[in-house]
Length: 38
Image 1 (cartoon, rainbow, N blue to C red):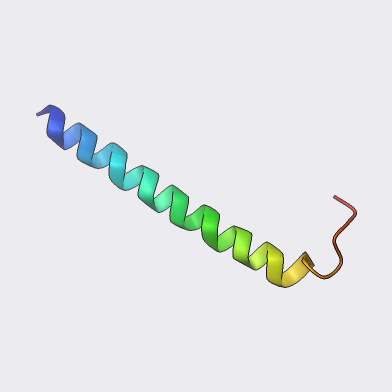
Image 2: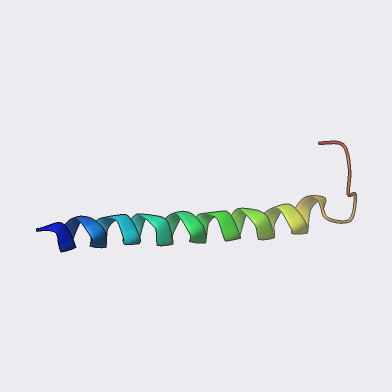
């Protein structure tokens, strides 16, 4: 039963990391050249 919980946690971390990478890439594309004003 624990392995199911671990699988869910790992899947959640992977999806969160994927979303974070996509946001980082979008941020670089949108605001990268400006480099300021946070």
